[in-house]
Structures are given as structure tokens and as C-alpha cells.
Image (cartoon, rainbow, N blue to C red; front, side, top):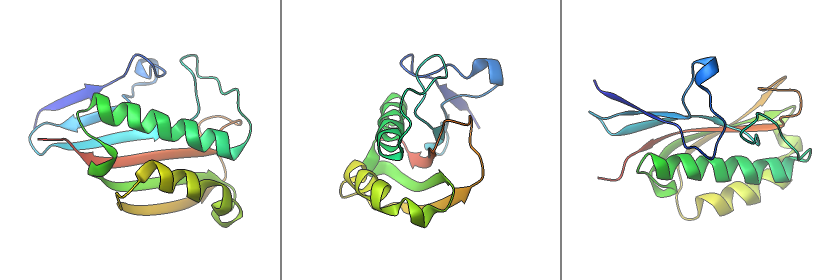
Length: 133
């Protein structure tokens, strides 16, 4: 298996922590995308509401997909981690995620968690996709 690492320059650099924004199994064409959050390149968020963080995490997801030669239409599985009870945030996050996905309908799981990458982060979105061949 050959692995290609994806690290768009417009996103934070995870090298220091041993992570890539995504890895591609070039044999199978599968793209494994790390959880995307509302961080700038300095690991900071300037938004403290779930709607804005969801929109920015979704934009980062699209950036990684494009860098990996994939797209929203090629997402196979999406996991959305939300700080707290997922049901409490559905009204805010579902329209943003549905708009991001368009007509794509991947397998999707929403997971409520006690904590995420930093105390300010309210949502994290990770995915498995396939490359465009």
C-alpha cells in the first residue's frame, strides 16, 4: 500500500503532532480525512458559536477533499462530533451540513462528546471519501 499525505497550506500544520489533514491509500483510492475544526493556521478559533464553527469546519473539509483530488460527491462516510448533546444542536448544524453535502448522501453519524481538540472547539467533522479517477 502506498500512502499519500495531504496537508493544504491554507490549514493548520499538524506535523508537530504527527498528523496529516488526510491520507490517501493510493492503491484503493480511499481518502481518510482528519477531523476538521474551526482553526486558523495558528490553531486558533475566533468564532464561539456552533453555526460559524460548523460552516468553517465544512469549508476546511472541502479544502482537504479538493487537495486530495476528491469532492463532496465522493464522501463515503461522515462523522460529526459535537461538544455536548447532539440533539441540542441539530437545528443549527443540520442545515449547514446538508447545504455542504448538496445531493451527496454519505453514511453519516453524529456523536456527542465531552471534549474536542481545544476548549473553544464545539464541532469536528471527519470523513472517508474516494478519489476522483
